[in-house]
Amino acid sequence: MMRKVLLSIPPALSTLLFCAHLLYHGVPLAAAAAPLGALILLAVKGAGATRLLALLHVLFACEWARAGGKIVMRRLETGGSIHPALEIMAGVTLFTILAGWCSLARHRD
Image (cartoon, rainbow, N blue to C red):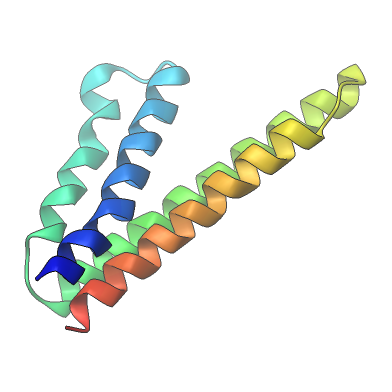
């Protein structure tokens, strides 16, 4: 029981972080809050819900990688340092992949 609760934390945080990313880029509040609906999948038993949540996190990670690449390219064009942006966005991308793995690991119990 405690293991499932602990493995639910990264997917929840990753989803909240993605919603904040959408809000930052000007997506309306109702649309930016839509990914929060995926958190319901944490309560649903079954392999289908688990795989869907993991797939969503893979898609979130693809968006983080795309946004990170865009930021790094902009920094290169302006002559700024790419390291802070590169490290932060890579970390967020890896955390999102970890969150997808955690959602799959929850189902193995």
